Amino acid sequence: MKPVLASLALLLAACGTTPPIQFFSLGPQAVTDSAPAVAGPSLVVGPVGVPAAIDRLHMVRLVDGVRVEVADGHRWAAPLKTEMARRIASDIARLRGYGRVVAWPQATLAEPDLSLPIDVQRFDAEGFERVTLEAVWTLRKGGKDLASRRFVGSEPVAAPTYAALAAAHGRLIDALARDIAAALP
Image 1: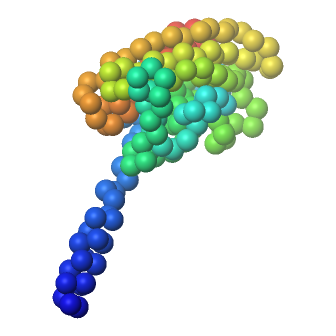
Image 2: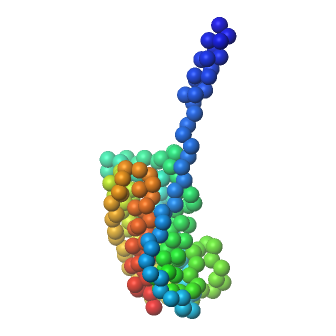
């Protein structure tokens, strides 16, 4: 009887294991020619605001147009709004050659020349088909608005995997950064 109970306990323990949690970043940055580094104005990217539904470490997908799926085993490596600010700051520095571009809230600049708050209104993963980003950004100097735009973009997901989903998110952030960089002084 004891061997049967021991076997049953082992079998039940094996059924209770969960797969390891996978962590994702926004994927590799696009490799393009960098602008030569210049002094340029100092710029703080952020704060970045995101909808409450995606303001979490778990990856979120919209399924059937109305149902939201929160992936327990697939998470962002850092808060999405922090990763977005970091990625945009890096892209702008590379595209424009600005030597002093940092992401909020880790900003090392006490009083930057320019600030760039971003309000993400939509950043939806529609199943494993596509990701859509809608954001409004404003370039400010001394508390006054210099430029403001609405960005809307969509990116296909290359494969039905969370890695491909994360990469599509990253490509959209790069597109947003290019839009912003084109408007900078």
